[in-house]
Amino acid sequence: METITISASKTYKVITDSALLARAGGFIRNALGEKGKKLCIVTDDQVDPLYTAPLEASLCEAGYETVTFAFPHGEASKSLETLSRLLEFLAENQLTRSDALIALGGGIPGDLTGFAAASYLRGIPFVQVPTTLLAAVDSSVGGKTGVNLKAGKNLAGAFWQPSLVLFDMDTIKTLSYDLLLDGIAESIKAGAIADKELFLYIQKAERLTSPETIAHLSRRAIEIKREVVEADERDTGPRQLLNFGHTIGHAIEKSSDFSITHGHAVAMGMAIVSKASQEMGWSQEDCHAPIVNSLRRFRFPLDCPFTAAQLSEAARKDKKRMGDSITLVIPVTLGNCQLKSIPVSQLEDFIKAGLS
Ligand SMILES: NC(=O)c1ccc[n+]([C@@H]2O[C@H](COP(=O)([O-])OP(=O)(O)OC[C@H]3O[C@@H](n4cnc5c(N)ncnc54)[C@H](O)[C@@H]3O)[C@@H](O)[C@H]2O)c1
Ligand SMILES: [Zn+2]
Image 1 (cartoon, rainbow, N blue to C red):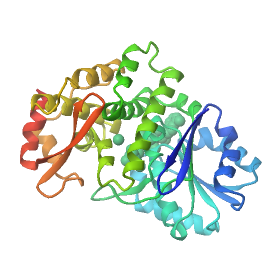
Image 2: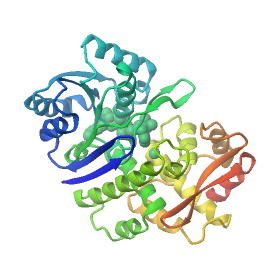
Image 3: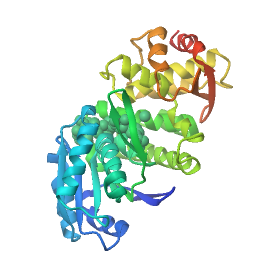
Image 4: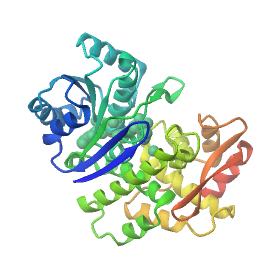
């Protein structure tokens, strides 16, 4: 069992182990205290038949009464409509401030449940039980919660930290390889911003998707996210480093109408930005080769199907743009990135250098 403690506006543990769902009740009771009686499990319709029953059994054993809210899987459900249905469901089931929500699933149940927890009765506790690697290494830690608006992704939300994160590594056995890659991309991103050793580890690893390798990558990603979140919980400075590969990645996701998933798009984004930074003379050493070699070891498709003009147009609309400039995350040396603001007018040339 691995435990990482996060000390943000709330202090909480991230516990990783196998066969954890069956023991979740005890850990949740410990984290939430003796007062709570009722828990609402929030999940999607694909995760529900796989993992709600063992979680529920363990929660009942720990003396909880549970209700379950399952919504259709997919990004379209991360909406105000689902949030509204969930809040009404909580009220109908008379959850009180001493009760709590449990997010069971990937980043979508996690983001939605966190926002519901932040707003129901002006804030009740919640626990993250991630079942995708992306949720385990990224979205379940750090307290960013929210839903999408018609105008764009994650435009309504709150900073609301969980009381506990429980990652049962057995759950990722049912993930497709593509979904696993989405989480791997975020781990490689974490390495690029703070852990040079991760690249050596990936180059040497014999079995890339063995539980040991995945456990190592996820532990490092969570530890690095902890450092960044503890330094800048509200994302006004260093937390933006976690966006390495993301400005271009979001533009790729958007341009593909989301048929290229987040992690795959971020992988392409990291390849483009590291190449462009080198071409511009902003990197002090070759960061591009080790990043791309690691991504290739996992068989990430890295050929970007869009032009620099298409991507810069899509990125201009990114919510992180500040006025006439855009903040990029640049790899200076391997394991060390810096924020760099460039005029929006230079973005297309920058991307062009990364695509060449
Ligand atoms: N809050 C944050 O800091 C943060 C960070 C990164 C990403 N995100 C958000 O996370 C979301 C993406 O996360 P995601 O990829 O986990 O999405 P997701 O929750 O939709 O999960 C992806 C798919 O996998 C299925 N699934 C989940 N667990 C499974 C399992 N164990 N076995 C089989 N299938 C399983 C789901 O039903 C879904 O269809 C996006 O909305 C993104 O904006 C948030
Ligand atoms: Zn991401």
